[in-house]
Amino acid sequence: MNWLDAEGFEVARQVLQRGIAAVYVIAFLSAVAQFRALLGEHGLLPVPRYLARSAARGLTLFSWRYSDKLLLAVAWTGAAVAATLVAGLPQLGPPWLPMLAFLLLWGLYMSIVNVGQTFYGFGWETLLLEAGFLAAFLGSNEIAPPVTVLWLFLWLTFRLEFGAGMIKIRGDRVWRNLTALYYHHETQPMPNPASRYFHHLPKPLHKAEVIGNHFAQLVVPFFLFFPQPVGSIAAVIIIITQLWLVVSGNFAWLNWLTILAAAAALSDDALAAVLPGSPELTPDYEPTPIWFAVVVLAMTALMVYLSYWPARNLVSKRQLMNTSFNRWHLANAYGAFGSITRERYEIIVEGTADGVSWQEYEFRGKPGDPGRMPRQFAPYHLRLDWLMWFLALGAPGESWFIPFLRRLLAADRATLKLLRIDPFDGEPPRQVRALVYHYRYSTRQEKKATGLWWIRRPVGMFVAPMKKARSD
Image (cartoon, helix red, strand yellow):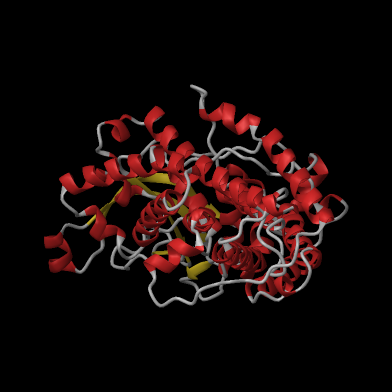
């Protein structure tokens, strides 16, 4: 089975296994911190009610029964197993050990995603599931990484980048006339500390950014499949552009998983050439067991079969974005920002204790207080904050936003923990309401004069004042 061995890609395997496992740690800990308030037994969109009225959209442990205790058991188990993979412990054993560990992560997290409803309706959820499934077949330190699995990671990277590039070209005209970044840094879902500075870069540089983006997403991905060192060079270009996105915004673990998937093209020799003085790796591999080779080839055949649908989607005029074509979340379609918002609107939630003076609730990540510097949260995912951005764009929110306001009226402790500031210190307000504000970054002169990061103006009422109903 020497033809199956990808010798010279040991660093790539270590980066893939440990990096993907690290993202799973973050994802499971996010579930520990947020799931019960959002989706638990008494959450905004309770899973028991969801399962009672309709079947889950895929395989999940919770179709048997849901409880908050079971959710915590699933999440903590996933985080613990993922932590052992980050430390490289299962990889020290036979190849079946890391395989079982990653398949367990895949199954546990899929159980969460498939009942997560709109709070788990993000493309990077399926991306994490697909990446974790592929990582299960990278083997252990005893054997060489299988070449077909590395190819599948390159195919994943291609779908991520080329799919995102095509959705942009086919979508908003600002990507075609190179003006998309006149708006994007200001209107993106959750700006970070550097986003305002990126927004104020000269417009010619913004156009150069868009050209660079098109090159990295529409041209470079083809070269991932070329012989070395071309494949490694293509991977480096993709990694650099993804790091640019990491520095300029908060996109949960999307960029980090793209970086990890692209690392599958990095050969040990290329890394040694770029990083002089790095230790040379000359692993003494054992022969790949026949059973493991059979399993890997069967999985590869399955993924090739499932890839028909995302491949067809890439060339379709009606390209779908962030779509799973099967119940296992494998061989998915990806893409982001096919359209760019030109102006930023925010939903600001307020409460009053006396019916006269209104005070703001502050969210952790989304813009609120104009004088507060945006924070860096990625790769952690603030699910409520993200949905507040979609809500301001006109996405349906009645199913969860009105229950959210009712939780504030009741001073629900679990809900208040999702926020940065509760102006009433745990006491229930008399009324709550939601207003719409227009936001823009302050100019350099305005920032110097006022210290404000944002300039905002009221637009109108989103939800009229609500008081606690007698039945609440």
